[in-house]
Length: 129
Image 1 (cartoon, rainbow, N blue to C red):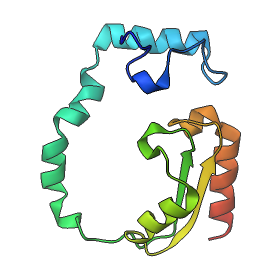
Image 2 (image 1 turned 90 degrees about the horizontal axis):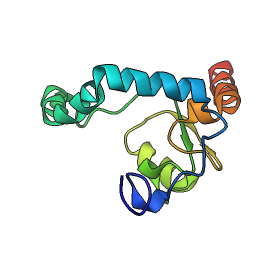
Image 3 (image 1 turned 120 degrees about the vertical axis):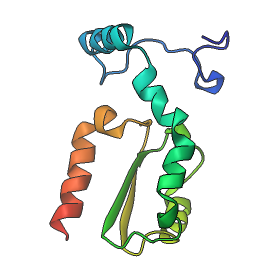
Image 4 (image 1 turned 30 degrees about the vertical axis):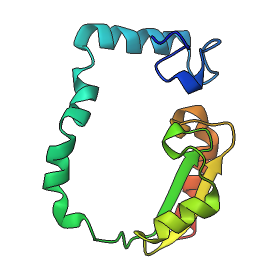
């Protein structure tokens, strides 16, 4: 790991396990990576160009079904984005964007970090269809 702490320096070093991750869950995941390695997860990125080739026909196709976007405000994938900015970007590719839900103090894995709030947002979306 980097001397700045962690794989991504700007994230800093962890001070302990987050509330949503138990030691038993972490031990299980570590055991699976020790058993099978990182190949499965890394293969997605190794195959990125092939995936692009296979989905090239969809490049300019808009999503036409009702859509809900859920993310954590601290997700490094959307770093610096706010609701208005995400809505603007998504409206270019989604015809029926119903809502953008951003959870404060939540990172990339919203379904694990905020399961109740994630479920509530999805249920609200589904009930309004």
